[in-house]
Image (cartoon, rainbow, N blue to C red; front, side):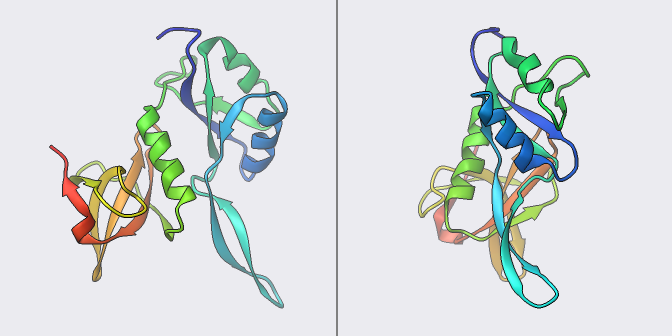
Length: 168
C-alpha cells in the first residue's frame, strides 16, 4: 500500500457519536462519509423522522496512511478497523461507492445481517444500476444485500427481479 494514496477505511466510534465524529473530521478537512437513513421515531406525543446511521458505531474516511493519526486523535474515535490493532485495512472503493448509491437513491433501506454466502448479483437497470450484492428473497419481494466485508455489516434494498443479473 502506498502511504500517500488515499484509501477508504472504516472508523469505529463511541456509541451514538457517529454524527459528532463526522463533524469533527470535516472540521479537520478529512474526507468522511457517514451513511444515514431516515427512520420513523416515536416520541411521547408525536412521530418524527430522524436520520440514523446505517452502520451504528461506524463511519468511513478516505485518507492516506500518513494521516491515520489525525483520525485516531479525533474526539469520539475508538479506532480504525484493521486486521490487527495497529494496521488499518482498506475497504474496496466499490463497496463504499455502492453504499453511497444506496443512500442517495430514494429506495427504502433495511439494515441487514452480514451474509457470507448467496447468489452474487448485479443490478442492471433502475436507480440502483451497477450495484453488486447478494440476492435475497423476503416474502414476495426480492432484495439486493450490499455488504461491507471488513465491518461484517450489510444493508438491503428492494429490487425488481427483472433488473438483476448474476455475476460470475
